[in-house]
Length: 236
Image (cartoon, rainbow, N blue to C red; front, top):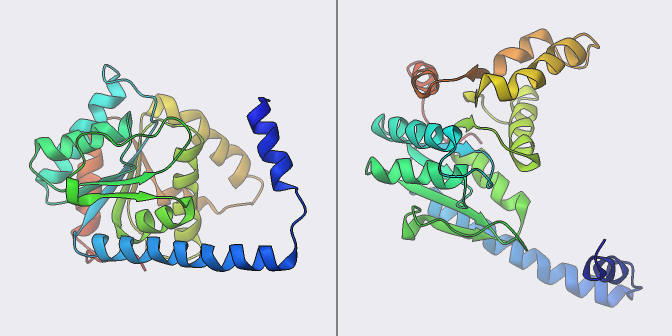
């Protein structure tokens, strides 16, 4: 642990009086509200979109970067806009594919002390920067008509499992979720199937809430097939 990290922990545990806590919390509410208002106003005008998730650390020469770009290109050709986290790696690939197809390229960026900078393929009028992860996640959940999840880390898993939880508990309408890369996600699926299902912590039917694929065409066809039956609209 670095000295600056230790200092942050010590600061967090510094005693504060009730008035200081109350004042700080009150102002924070207004900051949170402003992010929701900006997000709702901008996202509500964009139309049907698909969110693409994956690692910010993926390099442009990676097969997964090229796959993400191709998926975004094909989805845009089908009439969807593309939403990403607005950063580098897989996010950049998704926005690049959307711009290459002449479609809507949305970036929901987040202020972080490392890793995250806006990529150059987000439309200037569709680049929204958040301070709060939970506000940003609401935008992904509300306005995405589908999730395409490429290899990534904790943040990618967070988005994937939150979507499954909200769909499973019927807090939001069901939408298609596609995991790209059978080699990458295979062991996770095996664990879900052989541990979570067998322990009775989820139902066998819950495995149908997502699809695992390798090719861009599989993702596009799965999403198109879903919306040949159902109406495109915000999820809640």
